[in-house]
Image (cartoon, rainbow over all chains, first blue to last red; front, top):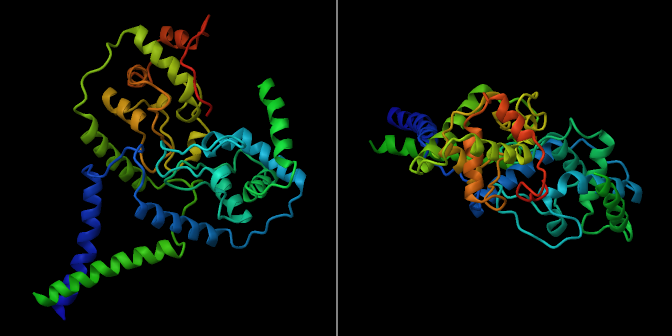
Length: 173
Length: 179
């Protein structure tokens, strides 16, 4: 029994020390121009989703109308599509960030509105998703969430309104 | 001895299991807008630095550090890097601070990475950070100029500062993709 305990403790000490040593001696790859393995993507994707679901469980999204979707879509075009994919353009795959940046116009999202709101506001650690709570109002954050949730199933006319308005704004920029 | 091995295996399995359960049930804190603890920032830096040193140290020496080269690199920096990494003589970037780990403020702090290492990081990006690989947007030649400039921050002569801010008369810096 004593030996068993000794082995148990040895494992708990040696494995983390070994892992830290492995990282500190530079044996991990640092470059982001190689795709993450399927195992890492699935494991970390599930971990992020579970953590966001826990954190956003108590939030309730306001009811979205077309105007709110247009507002959110305009923020998306202005501030998100550089990394997350252009609305109404052809698909391109991200291959320069690690983990890869989801291309929402082509993939949509499995996250609910309160979860999207939470992610945009607080960001995701150890990814290129930074926290936008300092830059967007609550109203803007909820409108982005409403838009993103429906990005692949926008009511008729909404995409046109988003793109028409932002084209004007873009030319004065 | 058999008991020791059995205990070791149980401990190892338990450790992995606890980690997986924590991740699976959402106990990992994923917010990027909290301050990163100093021990974690230090440890992440050490491991990224060690990895970059391993990969990039055998690269040959780069462009000569003439003012013209440093200025050319500085124009690229002002064009595309300042949003996250800070502009020379300006306050640190608010936007860069919202990443986790935060973007290093190169204009304010400089860097301990060598020119070769800066080139390698700009070209290939750094995993699990906001730093993406720039090889699609810039040629190796441009990235060498950029590295020459970054390696010379934060202390830049006023001549170089003026020159990099001078607007091009005609067509100039390389056409940039939208951010």
